[in-house]
Length: 320
Ligand SMILES: [Mn+2]
Picture 1 (cartoon, rainbow, N blue to C red):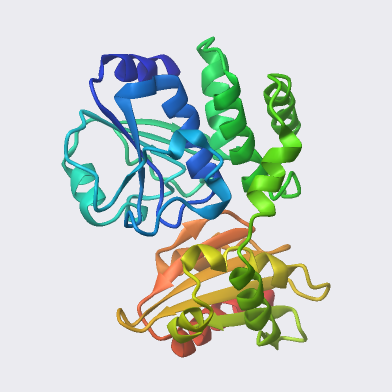
Picture 2: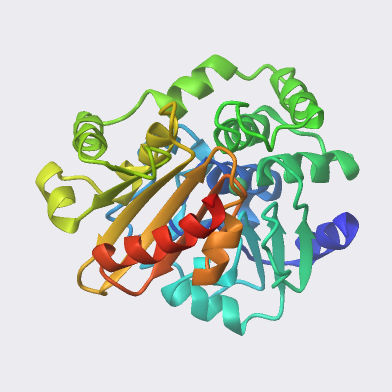
């Protein structure tokens, strides 16, 4: 599979590397490593409007500088590579049109729920991150990982493992991280860029959300609802909700934390779940969502007040 993918990359004139909606460090870092490898023939797509821009934590990745956005990307690519995109519905709007039309799609991912939607699929379900999948990809093909690629891959692995904390970490993850560190990248600085660049509004907003969280089932389950009005009040956007579910899960008694982000206009609610012990994919799959065992999500076409009842019903069944 690796050499088939390399053939496709070598044969293509113009390549679009597609990151998933609500981009995280894994999708962006993976994309940057590919861009640094392919160079000028490749563009990275970030699925927001240009005015929203590059997520604040990942501006240090130089490869994102000339990224395309949903309102600036053109239909001019003969090869599409989706990185860390668990399912096609994480590709939206015009990007989805381009994607559905193409017969030359590569899918590189590590989500167990990935259904191999590409024409070529490099999906390794047990891997910590797409960054680690790509690290192996370069190794298998004897492709030299330069410092810029290493920096991006390290950021991808670091963030998708919660700083090497999560269950998805294997001995091979540390080997990959070690080899990347040996290229001479500044690992401490990468961690600072990823975690210590939060805007003040984000931290105060999150403090508000956390302090209004509700606890049920003897404090084993905890949930917080985020409304558009609250986000407007603090002048924050979607990327600033990142980390709330992890904060709630870090409470001693909590098994499952839930963050519900209500979109009044669309009458729908985006649900993010985090768990310490329960496999969440059995819950999110009922709502056509996906993810990993300990971190998963779904979108429910109901207001948050209804969505939480539906989710809690499913959780009660699992916790019983
Ligand atoms: Mn990932």
